Length: 585
Image 1 (spheres, rainbow, N blue to C red):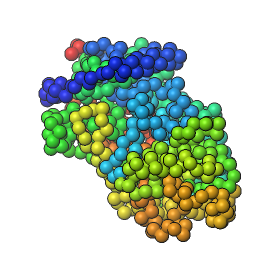
Image 2: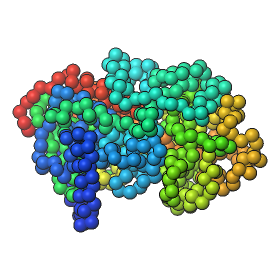
Image 3: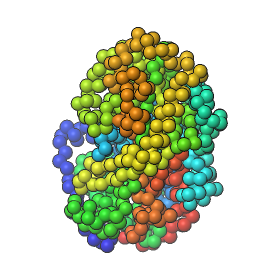
Image 4: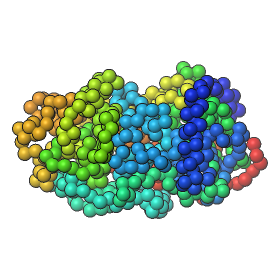
C-alpha cells in the first residue's frame, strides 16, 4: 500500500509556471526573511528553495503552527527533525506582532498575507493561517486551559498535561493590564449573574474571570514560533514556503518551493521514525485525502486512488458559532482585545473587545482601514444572513463604513460563543490542488440546542449592557445615541442590540442571521475513527496527526492553550516511546 501511495502521489505533481515578476517577488521576500533569520538568530530556519532535493530526518512535522512548533521543538531535544511550513516568518510583520494592527492581518487578502481567506459552504467568511506560528499569529491572544473534565475525557495524563501547560506559559503567557471598559464588562457579567468572581486564572472554571494573554505589556504578540528559540539548532531544520505538491506518505514527504522545484524528504530509519501532520483542522484532513487516506468514494470522485478507506477523515468538523453585539459608547474607549470571559453554566461564553476603530491606532492616516475584527474588511458582516455576504456586499459595506464619522465607532463589541458545538460538518476536497482551500461546511446552528445556548448568551449580553457597572459605556437612551451618530447608517454593517424597534426577529432567528466565525475550527481527524489514542493514523504505519483536527469539542473558551499544550505533550510522549535508529531508506 505504501509503494502504491508513492506512485499515486507522483502522478499529482504539477510544476507551476513562474513568471519573471513572480520570481523577483519571491527573491525580494527571501531577502527580507533572511534578514529576519539573522536578526532573531534562527539559523535553522531557511527558505524552501534552499532545501536539498533529497534529505533524511527522524521526524518530519508537516505544519509549523500552534501545535507543530512546540512539537518540533520538543522532538529536537533528542532527534533530527524537519518542520515544514507553507507560510513565512511572523517576525517583522506589524500586522502579526502589534496588538494595534491585530485586525489588519485578517483584512489582508494579498498572496503573502499570513491569513488565507475562504468562505465556508454555509456562506460564512473565514480565514486559515499560513505563517510560522499558525493561528497564534492571528488570534485575539486570549489564553485559558481546558477543563479537568475535558482532560479526563481525552484520556490524557493529567500530570504531563499540567507540566506541558506550564512549559507553554513560561514562554508565552502574560497577565493583562485590564482597562476600564474590560473592567466594566467584568463587573457587568457578575451583576448579570455570571458568578462567581474567579479573579485572574488560566483555569477553565464557571463564573467570570480575567484570563491570560499572549500579548505583553507593550502590546507585542508572542506566538508559537517563539518555542523554536528553545529548540536544539543542531537537530532542527525549518523550511518556510514549503507547499505540498503531493502530501505525506508513511516514509516521507514531497513538497515544492515557490519556484516549483520538487523536494523529497525521507525518514532516516525504520520502526520509530514518523511523519507527523500538524496542519490544522483544514490542512490535516485535506493532506490525508490527497495521500489516499479517506472516504473511498469521495477520493475516487477526484481521481485519487484510495490507499486506505477511512470514511471519517474530514467528518465531524466544527467551528464554534459566534454572535457579536456592538455597544456604542458616549466616551472614548481604550483598545483592548479579549481579556475577560464569562463562563456560564448553560453553555455560552461571553467576551468583549473594545477601542477606537477596534484595532486601528489613532495616529493612522491610511484610508483603507480594517476597522477591527468585526467588520466587512475582515470578512465579518453579521448584519446580513450568511449566504447574502457576497464580495460585493462586503465592498459596499466597507465603503459606507469608511465614509462615516470616526466617532461613530467609539465603544466595543460584546460577543457570545457556545460550548461544543453540537452541530458539525465536514471538510472535502475541492480539487487535487494542495494549494487550494478545501470545501468546508460547518453546519452552524443545525442542532437546535446550539441555538438555545446562543439565545441565552444574547440575553446575558442584554443584562450586561443594562447593568449599573456598564452604564458609563452606554447611552442612557436611544435619543441620545441617535444624536451622537447616524444609527441607521451604522446598522448597515454593525449588529446593535437585537430588540430595538426595527428588529422584530425572535432571538433564535437573530442568532442564525448574525452568526460569524471565531476561528475555533476543530475535528476532521477524530480519535477513534481516524487516529488511535496515541494519535497514530489507523491503518498507516509511521503517520500521526497532532493538532486541533483530533478534537471532538473545542477545549475551554479558547483553544490555543490546549493546542500548544498538545504539541509539547505529544513531543514528550513520543520521546518516552524512544527512537530506534535503523538503516536509511
